[in-house]
Image (cartoon, rainbow over all chains, first blue to last red; front, side, top):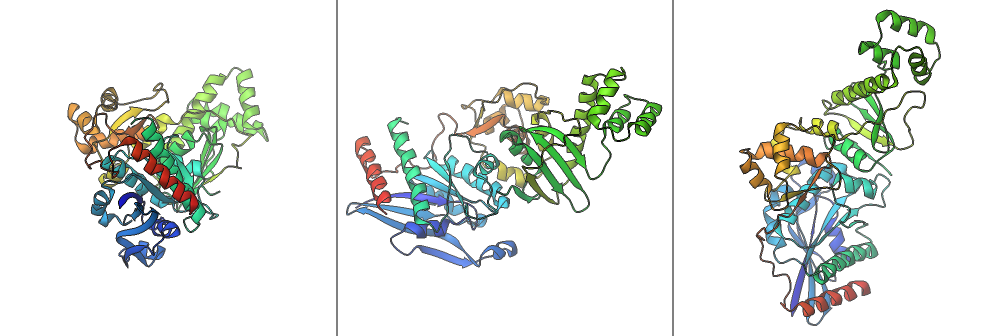
Length: 179
Length: 268
């Protein structure tokens, strides 16, 4: 059995667990724990402290694993471990919470430093009225125009599929360019 | 859709950077607990700025800049009546009191000063109103934002925030497509700029310039904010994580594997 993996990262409450849940064929294995900070508690009751883990079986010889990183900064020691051997990564950002954009940028830079693998950025919650426009998010995150920044609605499977496919297209393009 | 938020999360220089890069037209409304400000932009350039209800009419600006005397100022205020700033400007130019360049330079100086004052605002909210265009009855300028952004970025002092903005000094920098001209850089900033090259990590640049981590981070942050440079992986950098991402070393098998994944995701 061959296995490959992708990592879904991003700030606290960006929608990583939901993203993986939308496409995983197993119930997402996640270690959820009560939130520590008062401000964070206002967002949601529990968060991922170790990792989320989802699976997509391709055929009897190949399985894709999706790993979600813990969003709270005090668990960032896990990030490098989770990034080992990844095909690529997805950075999720909550389009309605500009207060998390700085952290998203920091996480993106950290992951880029870990490994030179392709990545895409998913602007989650684009269905919400208070969501920032994609191009505004691009500038706020200081993303080059070549970086794929895609609208996303994590509970919507077709939206999640589109993000995963774009990442796979990037991986393929990079292989074909011989990098 | 919304472009709104809090000044604790977005500094004024970051907002200016966003407006500059996105070449936005509209008005940035900033509300602090005690004051509010309107900054109007056209195509990403500052057109007009005002804090609260402060009088920043043309006569006042020229008077404060000593371009017209107290008596001239009083006469203008008494006689101008319902005259707009544009009409007043034409009148002053035709009367030979000031030149068009004088008017624009003084307004630019005044608006820049308004933005400088905003850099001190750390509490409050902001929103960008795309429909609120620069006021038509006032003289609009076209002020490039890069220098103001760099100036504002110099005021970022907090180590933790800089650490968040630039988490790794082992990355390199490269110039963006924006030309590096008419930008006012300090000696230290120029020293950093002179080493910018995808082969040099920020750590190496700091070392070559005998700067500490805080100093180089602060300078790089300003250059990033002004959109002059971007972070890139250093050429020839060692990859910290073993790059064994595929179960096979064969390139064709790897491609086939990715194509299988694509097929599977499509079928979900």
